[in-house]
Amino acid sequence: MGSEQESSISFDLSVYPYNFGDINQNNFINVVDIIYIVNYIFSAIDLSDFQFVLADINMDNILSVLDVIEIVNIIMEF
Figure (cartoon, rainbow, N blue to C red):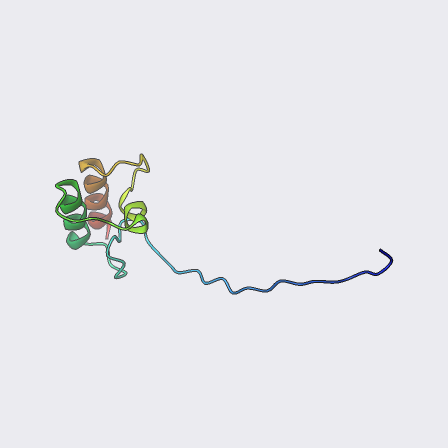
C-alpha cells in the first residue's frame, strides 16, 4: 500500500488515408467505383465494411442510386 508503481502502455496507431467514393481504394474516384456500387446493389459482389462506408456517400446506411449520383457529381467536379 505504501509503494507507488508507475506503468505505461505504448502502441502504434496507423492511419490510412481514404476518400469517400473511392471504393476500390486506388486513390482515384472514377467509373470503376460506380461499378462496384452497382454490382453491390444487384448482389453481384460483396463489399467489406470499410468499402461500404466509403461507398455510402450520403451516409444513410443504404447503398443506392443516390450514392451513385453523388459519385458521378464528384467525378464531374474534377
